[in-house]
Image (cartoon, rainbow, N blue to C red; front, side, top):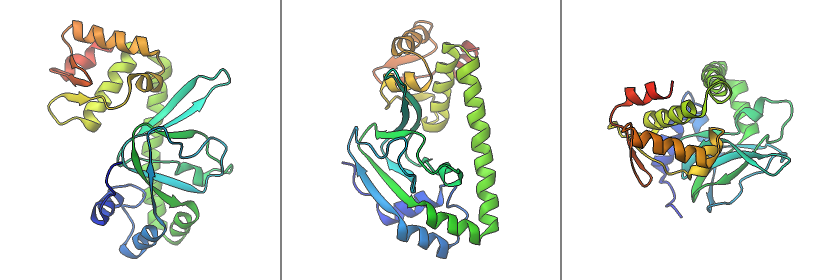
Length: 231
């Protein structure tokens, strides 16, 4: 199990999270008081679709998958939330107050949990906080719409390339390298393709010299060439 985050590390994490960045110290103290840090083992469920949505979450370490299971038993990964990512906060503003997806830990993880009612009271008391949060949520909605376009209008190669570029931006070290910490079958589900298709596209990219693959480590010598290949 990963070590528990130190209090100062948790404070930095909260300050860097869009839901809390605009809070002054007294309001942030209210958030800290009601926060719970949950320790999850690999595969452990956090909540399931249809359960009452009373809390939202922030990943401190590890990875959490958000998914739904179809009537024929196939699992569709909706999102993979890593350190610094929030999830389930939008349910606070929905008329139907239950979780629309299920969640499980992809790895051992620590997740911060927050009470919906407490956060809503902070919003009611601060118009500036409401405006700040609405701006951030609007940007996230725009990103989601772009993602839906990619998943529904673009071919498999484009979706894989788009995923790799996103990883370079979000987790890369600035040198054009990626470490795929998420299992390939989960990534494939995330970009709506079969695992064998994902592997085949990676092999093609490697054969054409666009990437170099060593286990889970991927080197991208020329990011522009990668972008052009997926078009």
